[in-house]
Image (cartoon, rainbow, N blue to C red; front, top):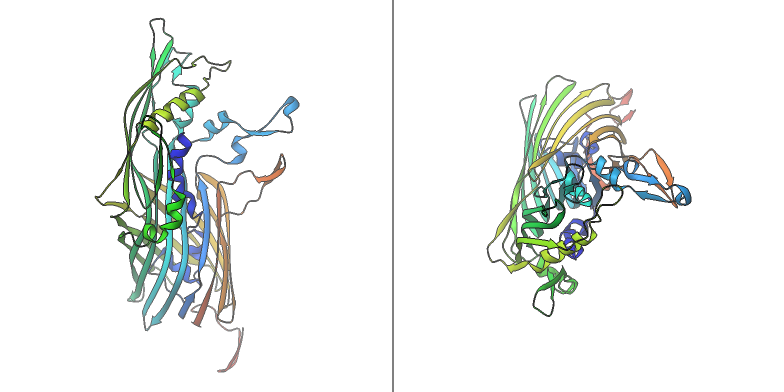
Length: 486
């Protein structure tokens, strides 16, 4: 039953899999998309036009396949399975699974004297699932047979949030003096759909009988979930109690425009950035992105479940390893929560914050064609922040090619090697960028897996770039004003 509840959250989490900004593109200053991460950045082109582009990324902080896959023994030697024990060991105190969907529908910009203007229409999805390390402790039950003590399991750290919106962004930047450049971007947001948890408090407590044996388990539940533009299909049993909750596919197909476009949901967001040319070779930069919100005013619903449920007569005998088969408890618990759900159409509006980001960087022009840089980044999800850092080296060939190699620490992983390629054919530009290149594979059963991968990231797209003026590259042989050989 609980899987049917999860489908409510999975709807937006998986609907747009999975596009996002990455770190490697930050250092590729020949691309208009480079300006997405700092509105003070300016191109050396007088005008650009961007065709639709996408970037795909999915990541988790909890584990990689190497940490959780185990090969069988004996007559199961050809079998590979996921070890629950190793999965538990690999988790951190707080873990994230997230997807940030990003599709650029249209973009253009131009330079007028010292001023640089840009405009873009983008579709974004920001979604994350936060869960505590102790979530998997439920497989052991919540009674320690070694110490003979009841250990309440508190799952209040669980949080789910997802938001999809289309933004229309107007950006502007200009230098102030010879060293400082400031930029800002204002974004009008048109909301499409939202799911957010206000509360997910679940506490499991074990009760003992007079002989110190497990007698029952009590679940104290307080759940409050808000959503907009997510159509529910609710079925009831013969007693009028909710039996299941799932997505209404018919409404998705028939009422698509009313649900996601003409739903009265809108918002605003802002980007701010600055660069400072400390020396002729060293540039410092900082930016704060996506500072905003979306207000949801129509097709809003609220899911609540509050109460205390006591389960008796459950199979609580531990196996040889001291673990309890939790299947019966999970089934009874999920059925009880579903049957206690209250789903209401909510007239009052609510707001969802966009995901703020802060980036700080420094770059050094090593030679006329090579620069190196470092960047620190923080993405603020829920009550915490996801931190990452990147170092990069970028090689530029006149105005035709740009290659970038990066190394990042992100998602609690140190093995993120990235690569970026930008190529020009006259005014036409093509780029391909990834934050993670898998380098180690292993045969597992009938398939090959990248063992240490926690991130999947790729972005590609096309631009038209006009009026290029290189501030660094110089001609090696000058013939006359009309012909320059580089």
